[in-house]
Length: 330
Image (cartoon, rainbow, N blue to C red; front, side):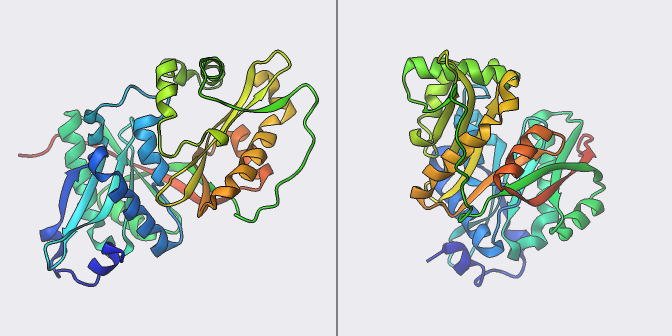
């Protein structure tokens, strides 16, 4: 039986008095966070702000510094106890490097959202000292959150990102590849990792600083990683010119298209569409619950056009809200 669902029917009336915030522990809390996100998904039929693979990517993603237990502090958990003293997660937040927070909360506890935002403001001050700002997001369907942010003097900055999904019964196109290219399943060999590193760094310059051989090998240890879903397009010279990786969370069976990109000199061939279709075909055997591609910058015309040409549809528009942070008044 789902503990959160049972808990939601057995709670104290004074929720704010019992609400507790704590720092996430990767070793202890990963499955608990996954269980929570699955509960949110089952309640809403979607995840608008935080998907399970984002939490695991916080540790294993190739475009960041080496993970330590200090990085656990970027994920926060809020809990309430039921009448039997059993603690249950009702909200989880993830902090990005720009003090941008993605927060999911069980819908039956939306009344606590204002308190949680205030907790996050205090927390941001505590970890960054004189933080200049804090950022949150809303989606069009979540009007309650927009009202709360307005009450807390947040400023609506812009429409910032799109979330995409693709139908699980989507018809996958069968289009012949140009003869000079071939789809290749990336292996964990040193040769393949070297080629992947070179390609990834050229496509995403911000990754070049971090995506070492050891970092990419570490990525292959993630639970969401499946070697048969890690694909590259290979040129006649044997180089990787495009990469595509689908990730699958083992607990929720929620999948994410991640790390798609093509070297600029090859983009006119639209080869990434072939990679994505191949990945979608391979992904089907795992029976995913959903297939997402999330937090896509609205100004990235290249990436948005690829997703839409394949059949991904925009499910949510994410709006950025910002608030200057001053020192706490003691």
